[in-house]
Length: 231
Image (cartoon, rainbow, N blue to C red):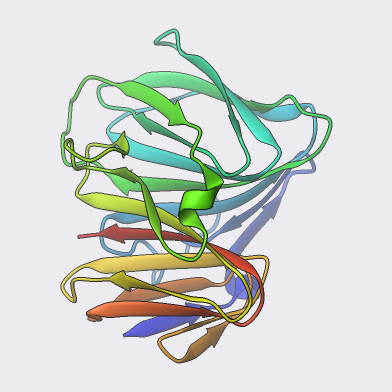
């Protein structure tokens, strides 16, 4: 099953400094048909104005992945971690028993990012944060796994049975993700239109997939893809 969720049907909240789109029910947006997808609970498409951001606020027992698409986000938390994650790179936070963090756009341009929440498999774990600069060439023409629950993998680690992957395709290229039909995949493309197992999607549409043994994405235009595969 493939369910294309057009961008203009997503939840929306414009706070001036923050223009947010919600793929799943979040804050004041409630859609009983879009509460989660497998273990994926939140996928927010955020545009943050220059010199603004999220002040300190708490989380617990959630795996939070931030994929920066444009600009950069600067992180600071109650564990003493600080870092700047730039476009194309990823940060992860396992909130565990509890953590307070702030996320600011300290740049002179707007920042665009996906913030993704995945339900944790380790309730009450010790909280942690990490980020990584990924070589962009490794995701050109195919998927690269950026974060996962596999401790043996050379990825950022999260406490969830999930993988977060990205790909960059030029017009006419395709990439295939080998999927387990029993799992749930959610995919968003930016920059251009794509075709997913024969179904067309526009930039920033949500693409919910389950029951498929493989997901083939064809780039109808140059596009960057972010995919989450979870149980």
